[in-house]
View 1 (cartoon, rainbow, N blue to C red):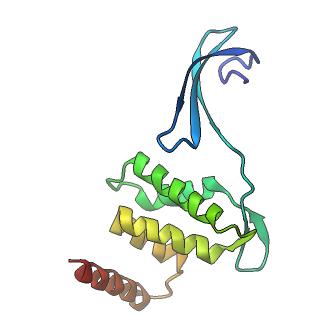
View 2: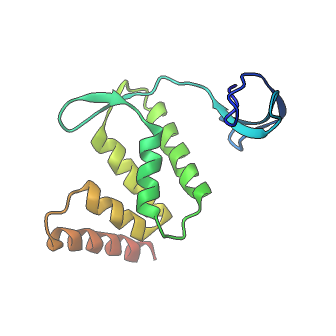
Amino acid sequence: MKCPYCGYLEDKVIDSRLSQDGSTTRRRRECGKCEKRFTTYERVEEAWPLVVKKDGTREQFDRQKIISGLMKACEKRPVPGIAMEAAVERLEKRFMETGEREISSRAVGEAVMEELKRLDEVAYVRFASVYREFRDINEFMLELKDLLDVKKKGR
């Protein structure tokens, strides 16, 4: 592993721990040259489905894009990072379990919105307003009305 501080290629592992669900290994390492410590995370590389975009192009599933979208939606909201990470893990598991080789970007977006609805309603509305490309205030208000109707039924 390349040291992030000095670039040296040899290190020793000081501590290893599995994540709660066992999908990730966290390792504390110490550089063999500068002796600074750093953390790495290991996960099994899996064959992710391709994401089919609106225009028909395909791209690799990108976990970072989902994290980025969640972080933007949850910015300045009381949503813990660990809750966002758990949401991403659930989404990844969901997409892998389909067994499909391709998944539409629409399905990804809808799944992200479901997770956001559980995490924070304001973050959900933020994401939905960008994702669904509301053209005017009426479309936005319809989405809010649907959210309020669902909330009333849940009481």
